[in-house]
Amino acid sequence: MKRRRLSIAPIVTIATVVTIVPMLLCSCQYKDLCYDHSHMGEVRVAYDWSQSHQADVKGMTVLFYHADNVSADPIRYDFTGMEGGTARLTMGSYRPSTYNYDTETILYRGMENPSSLEAYTRKSSIEEGTQLSTRNAMPRAATTEDQPVILEPDPLYGTAGNAFTLDPNTQTTVTLQPHRRFKEISLKIINVPNLQYTGQFGGALTGLAASIYMEDGQLSDDLATEAFTIQVVDGSTLVGKLRIFGHCPNQNNKHYLTIYAILADGTQWYYTIDVTDQMHPHGPDDPGSGDDDDDITIEIDGLPVPKPIVNGSGFQPTIDGWQGVDIDVGM
Image (cartoon, rainbow, N blue to C red; front, side, top):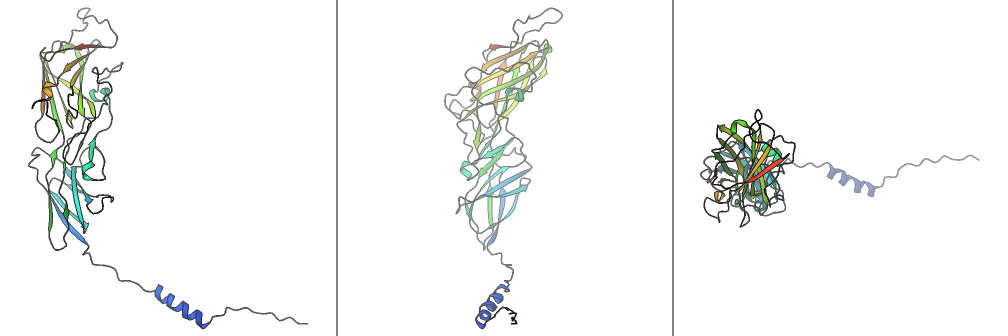
């Protein structure tokens, strides 16, 4: 018996054709590209430096926060120079925050909204700040050992602006008025004996603010210490400078200045001075924020630097390590 070989071919019914053809036609349809940018708008950012007339920065960052979507990340624009520029944003309401971007030591946290945007610096050490080479751990002023030592902040300017809404039919201009978010402290010590025998000097100052909020210059509650270098400018004078975010975030706060000296014979000395009164040029209630140009000057008259051993004469060191002296401001 011969067997027939059956050939199975696909069966295409009219119903199948009716179903597939519309699908193919739909998949081949293309939409025209959208050239309508009416959902975008431009905002002109201008700067008023009247509150920070000494500022000299290379450029400014603006963070545009979505006022109607607080969970959205801010939109960042960087403008070269101090004049500002133009940003393109989708239509909506925004609140800007600004700061200069030409800094190396400044870090930021709390970037989710303008009110929590906080500037700070990383942890440091007395050795790093003073740049002193020593074989022994450098001592701290009594009662301040638990304060973290932070890196000196770079010059910082910033603020937060008012909320605005982009209108496609209106030219939108936002004027931002940066404030100085740091203070400068100048130290001068006169009538210092035996400077011709000294090698290196450094300093540290306690009771400083660890950070500052960019919106309004409010200081954080945390206390910190900063260390800095000190130079010999003549036969009896020492000078030093440091920048701080501010001081006295807590009431009844004390400020101790510590001067470190390494003599030519290798002996190491540190002098602790209570400079609280000089840190408060406007009285004890001065918060010490960096919101104005009122800097601080600390002046010390006299520092009992001993004469080291020279040709078998002079002060004979008896202690290996740092030797401490508490002195009064009026010495």
